[in-house]
Length: 347
Image (spheres, rainbow, N blue to C red):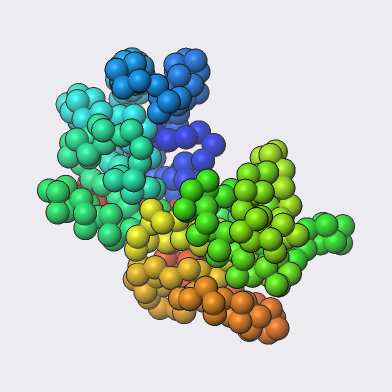
């Protein structure tokens, strides 16, 4: 089987899919249009929200035409058996129909709610044409089913165990990076940002380090305790460094992006793989995914500090919990299991 991934080249999801299919496909190729199409056109399109409607649409249509030509050219050259698309990757329904004429199967993996993505007018039509839509959120799938997009499957695509794993850390790394709790991420600049800051403020009286960009400063007036907990830099932290940071700490509080209605954030699986315990903001699909084991869940931000203290003060219980969770996700939700489900559901 020849596989093409229409995905961001350096994303953790693309790496997970690549690893999952490495023994299932004869060849795997990642096609990231942003690395091939003119960067000037992409930058102009990214600024479209600030432009008049007609000009904005003119730029978007030019970009879409170029991307469709790229995709069709790749398909004609590579002759794949399967294409997996991350969200939409600017793929249109018309192009999906052309690709399927070659006998190639086309499926979508939704990492975000299709109704929350901005300026993706072509997306629902595209999903009507593909062979299957996979998503890690039962609510998204329910909404698609109501709209007549019934060729859907719930999928946890796996996690990149080569990127997040247990390792020995040095005394110097522990002195620099060690803390009871850690969070790595950016703040949003709207009400979602307030929600994230409110969540992390729950842990601000504990030993927590919050790594992110300078934009966190916006929320210091509302949540002054966060300022002393934040380690700010606009330089991107490498995946290798993040893995080391996780290995130096005990607990990772995982908030739920408001676009995730019932589903789970991939960070949960990455934390467990790296040997750190996630404390997870409740979502309905937790009981579905972790059906055979208990995951530490936050159902009320006011109770979050006490839950964190329990696991901080009981390291033996914490270590045993992580060990059991690690065994569970490696059996049920590895990248290989994700690939096998996709193959089972479409072939």
